[in-house]
Image 1 (cartoon, rainbow, N blue to C red):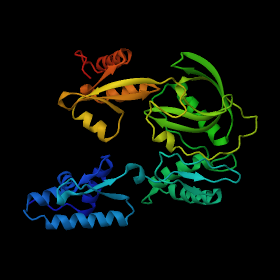
Image 2 (tube, one colour):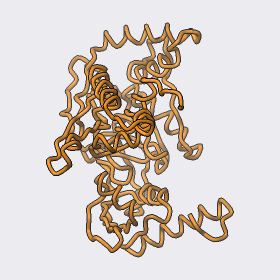
Image 3 (spheres, helix red, strand yellow):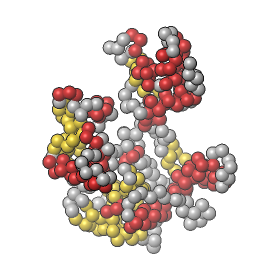
Image 4 (spheres, rainbow, N blue to C red):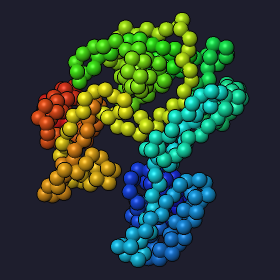
Length: 366
């Protein structure tokens, strides 16, 4: 008989299962997927002990603060009518907003299900100083976690008057010029300094000068974006850093007034359809083979346009930025194909060919 699986191992497997699914699971589905339940069932015809184990695990998760939801499915068999889910948005910690005197709070976007947490600056400073002390001793058990928390918190707190220094910035695979812009823009965000740059709009294929108040930097799909208030358009806009040129930060003018910003609207959005992106919209129909089609339906990816024989479907997407969308489709291999328009189907084929050539695949399969 194999050794018993430890309770912590079993509960971690249970959490991992919940956050990897965007739909509710029946008890039978959970027991089939989690080894800590499946193995005891295989070794015994009596499921009473597994049932008690599952009930204890649910109780433990709820007491630990995991927002486990229970849904009723009256169409299912009597023993399977209860279905369980753990919303991945509710699972993560809330956004932390530093409330400065005179700052105007923006309303929380409807797409965010977890209310943001607020922290006055004086409390944030005390917390940063404690983390700063803790992180300098690598022998302490949670020094790595303290270092991570310190970097995130001091991005908003660091100032020329502090001894914390500038916050470190994780850089992407963009070219050297884009990496240098990220460093300068992070300082502009931290010091609340206006910036100017020329921006290349891919959709219109034109370059225009922009004047902005940098509000935040967003890293998504291996690319950096600047969220800023466009002074000429008097509106919130998002800019891909690699499309900028001639970046200048105005260190002489007064800093713009602080504004609380909730990033959940951008972090929850797809990289190809970010709020504030000025690129024109393109409607793309994607044919998805089964079972990828089932995954897309359960995870609400795109809008169903047509159902095809064998379980395949055609789903429609609204795309503003084509490059991240094509790279997302590329990750599914031959499970997906672009049905329309032809120009996007051709672009996906060319991307697949470049990847195949890079990896020495003469057959061109991706």
